[in-house]
Image 1 (cartoon, one colour):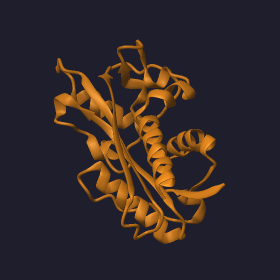
Image 2: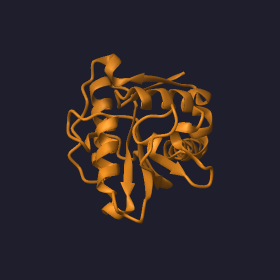
Image 3: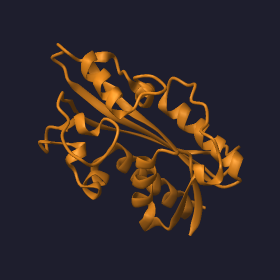
Image 4: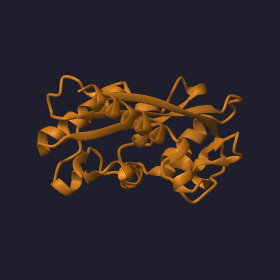
Length: 199
């Protein structure tokens, strides 16, 4: 199995990536297990932050690295919280505080449309001149009342109108088939397969 450092210490993300990559023979090593601290995320776009995190993890480990930067963008808020999704309620905020702030910001708004974004970057080395980059979206609506026990982040408030359920009400295997992260990972795998055939 190929070792791949995951540039995240988020337990929810680690679990999702391990499940999604299991069929492709990658051994996912969370950067925290190697004592690698989180990278700075100073950029205003998901892609730039994901690239910075992947290069940081690869430089510190000497291994190929995979990083994602993801978040939720509310249409009525000009895309906020966006890249600040994980720390929307402040550096010490948690999922509940982030959700409460988002719901408060949307009070009175008719447009409750939102989408999750996942920018996924894989590098073979810290200075890889050709990183694999994928960015995908998952559309839904923000609702006030939390529903569901699965998922993490904004999932309990992210309603999928076509299914009549929130992301947190989906079984993990079902969520992985349609989520922004699942979409991005399948596209990344397709790129890896294409690159391998062309080599």
